[in-house]
Length: 440
Ligand SMILES: *Cc1c(COP(=O)(O)O)cnc(C)c1O
Image (cartoon, rainbow, N blue to C red; front, side, top):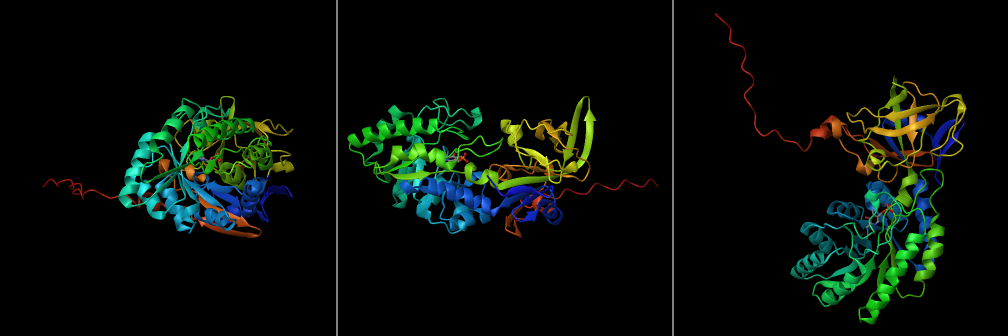
């Protein structure tokens, strides 16, 4: 699953013990495992090797340049959803032809920048967007290769905020409309409409929704080909599960076992956009206990990490396993499960210092005793963790460290108070308060 293990009663990342990392780099701290990123990428690539699929890592899940760079070295392509993400992957020297650009609201600047860079695919989501891309492309003398994002109306059975492939969401176009769009836009100058894109939600912890949506997409492709359109590619999207609570997510090979046979021999280039399944288990958030407190019959452990470092529990009710980095009485977790209840533990909420009741990292957990100064790890936070962090309450963002064997490198330094105000300007200099007049 990953390279975070308790050895001698202490959490290690690869060969390094986490308390030493916290001592050296401070807390809150994101710690990533190089080997876990590589393992998950390779498992994914190997599972879909028979299709020679292009694995486009979803940059929005974990966008640190060092992590993108190490995935590039493994052969990864990239999926971006904004001009900012595009600039990150260009910064690391990714091959533009192996970049796909998704998202319902690409701005004109985004589109111009992507055309200038010569990216491989735009995943387009509406007629209005196709119109706009065509206009900008013809003005620039360019042609945009397009995959139309379809909404196959398949329920992935995940959180409603991360469901994207049912009829009521803002994403994609439904199947009937897709045929009309191909008819209307096939000959439009500036466009090369040649693919179908899917992304039904995240995380999708069963294989069946993929089978359902790929099957629907393939019959659409058959119809489109019969209508005379040259369809060259299918992009199956992302959303593949990660391990948060036990091992609820299917392995890459389990997804591939059912998806690959559907796509074999179809004369289609296959693209995939995994984010979470590669990055989530490759990171932990380490926080230090500031205080413990009892309120009514609830016990709180107040730590220096907060909603500003990890918003998923507050935003989606997401579960992240939490456990002391060096638990007392040697109570190391046999599994990372929501229902873990070892003798000698008590029920606590892990909360942060931010002025919001929603500022919690974990609720109702049976944990070994924690006291001031103790470190706690919040697991499976490599995806949608740091990237969603904010400076609310003027909290500088945490540092990120990448561990490779017995080596640890800072891949993003901790922000300073100067960073907090670096982009701000005084509008004028007001006269200083007049000194109180002396009475003669
Ligand atoms: C977010 C997103 C992904 C990645 O989802 P994961 O759950 O991280 O795999 C892939 N494709 C698109 C279009 C997305 O919006």
